[in-house]
Image (cartoon, rainbow, N blue to C red; front, side):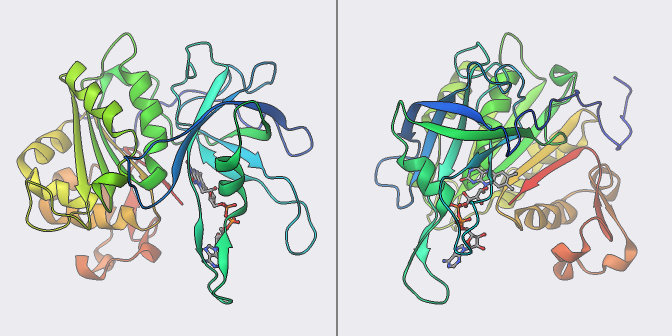
Length: 317
Ligand SMILES: Cc1cc2nc3c(=O)[nH]c(=O)nc-3n(C[C@H](O)[C@H](O)[C@H](O)COP(=O)(O)OP(=O)(O)OC[C@H]3O[C@@H](n4cnc5c(N)ncnc54)[C@H](O)[C@@H]3O)c2cc1C
């Protein structure tokens, strides 16, 4: 590794894309479908595994990519439902090491309709969460080529930020990183409103026990944590662990991955801009002087006045 890699980022692996399209979907057989939050969670999030043996998806996906799901039925205009994307939560070798079992983490969309105020149920998320073991679904993909681990993934330090189902790709990536080797280090910051909503919590706690270079931090926004007076969003971990985070972000080998709710990236960039010296910040974010005061930064400025470098990987939805 050079002393300080160019901030245009590490080399990424070639990935397979769109091996199954809408006109020729793969068949996935559900082999597991279970809640992956803590008991008494207010929301409903499920870990769902599909056996894709015999399809072109088998052995040809990479953690960090997503796959498409074609829900049955038609929309309110009578057209077949369009595909929805779901991040792959399994490592690149699949759930059982043979590349044929692919998983994801699905949150049921359940709400009141914005206009009618009647019950609003998301089509694909509820379809997926209702699937029973043995039932099948039409799957597409894989999709995405940029939100993946670099080719030489063991040579890096990682800072992962997740909110909600944004945890899915990091479950898979950490599964790749700690399989038969270890990265230099990996820190995962998982954000959720309450402790009960933390996904795969026991899995990450166990990983932390097994791997000294893995650091797992949670940020609860509507509950007090033992180490903090107020509710925390993921970006606040940059401040509560300022020394450790500054040291991590100063390393030329560090990469940042952000996945989850649209908007979370701005909170993280603003906090980085507040705590990091400019020469370190510029390794991750190029700030045009016209961006003005940090308080006034907005998503509209992203990729124009605020340009993440290729050491930052973003997947927000
Ligand atoms: C790259 C990528 C990866 C993703 N990964 C995941 C993942 O791992 N897990 C996951 O759970 N999701 C993931 N998503 C989101 C997922 O694709 C779906 O958007 C989500 O599951 C909702 O789909 P649905 O069919 O259930 O809802 P839909 O039936 O599509 O309803 C949602 C849409 O309806 C509208 N809507 C929402 N709420 C209301 C309301 N109260 N009243 C009226 N209209 C409303 C909104 O326009 C919204 O877009 C990902 C998205 C992308 C782009």
